[in-house]
Amino acid sequence: MDGAIGKADFSDALPLAPTSSAIKLPKPGDLTDLRPNREGFNLRDWAEQLEMHEAIVPKSCGISQWEKRVLHRVTYVERVPPPIASRPLFTTSNNVPTPLNVQGNAELIRLVVAQIPTNTTARTRLIVGNAVAAAINPSSTAPGVYPASALEAIVPWWRSFLDRARPNSNGTIFDPAAAALLQSLVSRTTTYLYNGFATKAFTDIHG
Image (tube, rainbow, N blue to C red; front, side, top):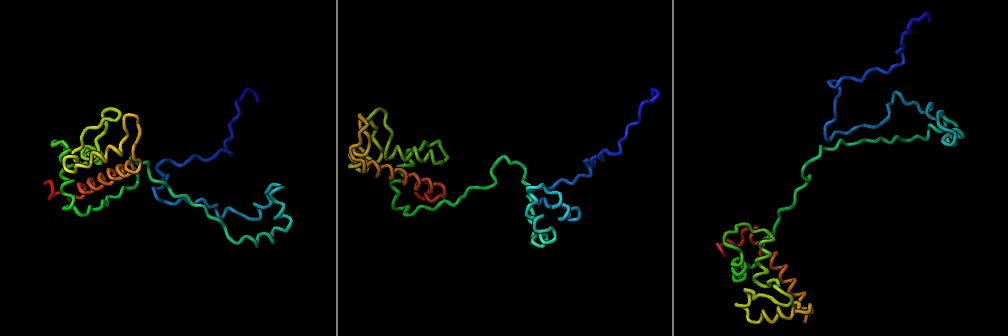
C-alpha cells in the first residue's frame, strides 16, 4: 500500500436515525399497529425461507395450494398505556345508605354521641367504633375485668348479658351464642351510627 492509509468504505453503513424533532411519539390511548408491512411481505418468499421442520406441510402440498388456505391474517395491536399515576385510576363509591328509624333509636344515638370527646369533630369509622364500644361493650382492662358500659344505666339486664357473652378471667365464654350476638350487635351498631353521621341523618337528634 506504499505506506498510504486505506480509505474507509461506509457504503454498507446504516443511515442515521431521525432527529428527535422528527420522531412522533404515541400518546396514551393510541393503538400501535404491529402488523407486518403488506408491501414488503411476500407469502411465497416467506414459505421458501422456512426451516425444514417448519416447511413440511406447506411444501408437501405445494405453495400455490397452501396460499389458498390463508383465509385471514391476525392483526396485533397494542394500546399505549397512560403514564404512571400516583393514585389509582378508579374512585371508591360514596353511596352510603341513610339509616332508618332514626327517631326510634334517638336514645342510643345520644348515648354513643356522648362517648365522643367534645373537641372531636371528625366522625370516622374508628372514632364511631370506639364510641360504640364505650357505650355498649367497653374493652377489658385486665383478663375478665370490664368497666361499666353506658348502656347499663338505661338497660338493667345489659350487664348480665355481657357477663355471659365476654371471656372471664380464664378466657372462657359462658355462652358462645351470646358472644356471637354481641359481636353482631357491635358491628351493626357501628355501621348504623357511621352511616348516620356520613349522611347527616342525626342532625335533629344531637344538633
